[in-house]
Length: 145
Image: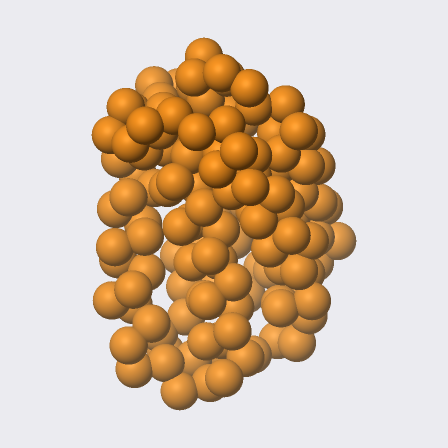
């Protein structure tokens, strides 16, 4: 997958997430949205480096990957209760397929943990974005509106 497409998608998702959080009434749904936005923000930081929009900094890229791993580990707990809100983009299949949903979060966590210690050069960013983006897409395509 083209790293520029992934980076552009992350930036768009981050921008629309901030707008989507306005008007959320359910605190559990707001917490979920905030957790997912934190993942997107850290993915954006890596994506901006991958595109050359910001200077490569291995320590910052690894820290962003570590933050993604931490947030991904928390995803199942955020979605454990079947809470809803008109602003939520979560599909009901999350709760009917919770084991698969949790497994996808675990895969993202594992990828991000690996990247948190392996990103060393700008050339590492394209593959990092590819693997992170594919993991995000595998979940969003099934569990997000």
